[in-house]
Every structure is written in structure tokens, then in C-alpha cells.
Image: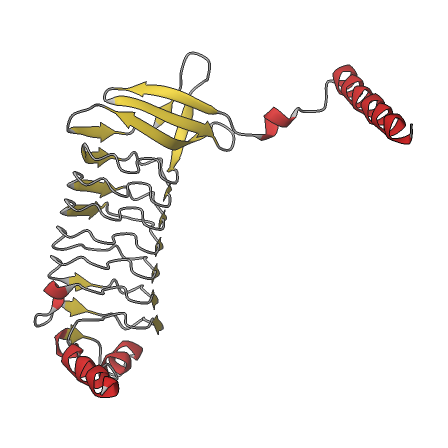
Length: 276
């Protein structure tokens, strides 16, 4: 009897709450707090987007043509039921493993590129990062094995590059990072075997662990140039690169770090000796 009474009481409370909500008209339902998904047709497929703040939207998914194609992301999205929204972000995994995309045009309304946003887009060859983008998320372009050209627009506001951002971009030969960039996280350029030159911008303060692991193309005179403002360099940041090929300003933190490095051959000998 006690259990039945408690159930009845809970039901009465629920009915009362609904009645109060309907009578006042001021209380929002749960659905009002969950960003719904909408779709928008573009020339090459369908974008799914969700509301962000006000009249803004985040691209959360893309379904495209079954042939090689370029994607032009519009600066606004809408459909027959939703008014125009400004696209401010490419969400996590939005274009994950879209293997038929050859290039992407990102509008200058976008301020962030999410985690794994374009990961596995193995046919992606070129991309222009608008000046409006302030952050590139974890694994954003990981395993984009055809990616050769990455251009950052003048006046870039980019401040951070996440872990694994360009991991295994094995076709990338060079990249010019913008001034204003402050941090590059762990493994960001791991496996970029075709990379033959890299210069850190003067504003860069932090390099994470194993950033240039397996970047064998940087084993050439003057191929890797470090800046004076660097304050932190992670473990094995330049694994596999001989220190004689790394240029760092005299007396800088970067120069001290490089000076203490063990070259790959010496490292192997040390490991073998320890094994014996």
C-alpha cells in the first residue's frame, strides 16, 4: 500500500508541474535545452547542422556524392523550417572518412575546426584555413594521406593546433604556419614523412611530445628552424631527426634543448648496449 501511495503521489506532482507550466507559459520544455539537428542541401550533398548560440550553427555531419568532388561549405545554412544561421564551427567528426572529397572551401565565418573533423579524408589534396579560425582540434586532418597544400589566410587568428592534427599526412611537403600561433600539441605532425622544411612562427611558445616523430624528410641542413620565444618542448619532440639539422637561436631555450638531444644513431647504440 505504501508503494502504491508513493507512485500516486509522484503522478499527482507530475500533473501539477505540467499544469503550472501550461498555465504560465514561461517554463521551457526539455527539448528547448537540446540543440536539434537540421539538414541543408548544398551542391554536392547534404550538411547536417545544429543550433549554437543565437542565429549561429555548427556543422555536425556531411553526406556527399559517390564520386570525387570539392566541398564548398556555405557561410549560412537554412531549410524550409529553419531560418538562416551563420556557420561558426566545423564540429567533431563532421567530415570523418569522407574519402571522395578532394578539396574543401571553409567560409570566413568559421572560428574553430573540431576534433577529427576531416580525419581519414584520404583524397583531400588542398585546403585553405580562413583567418577567422582560432583553433584546429585533435586529429582534425589526421590520415589525410593525399594532403599536399595547406594555406593559412593572411591575418590568421590561429592560436593552437591540437594533438595528432596532421598525423600521417604523408604527402605534405611543406607548411607555413601563421604568426600568432602559440602552441602545437603532441604528435601534431607525426608521420609527415614528405615534410622537407618547417619553420616555427616567432610567437610559438609550446611544442608537445613527439611532434615531429618519423618526419624523416627533415634530416637535411637547415630543414627545421625553431624560434626564440619557445618556452616548452616536449619529450622526443624531434625523434628521428639529427640535431645538426635543427636551427635554433643561440642562447635560447630551444638551443639548449637541441644541444642536450641524443642523435638517432647514438640513441640506438645506447638502447642496444642497455639490452646487452
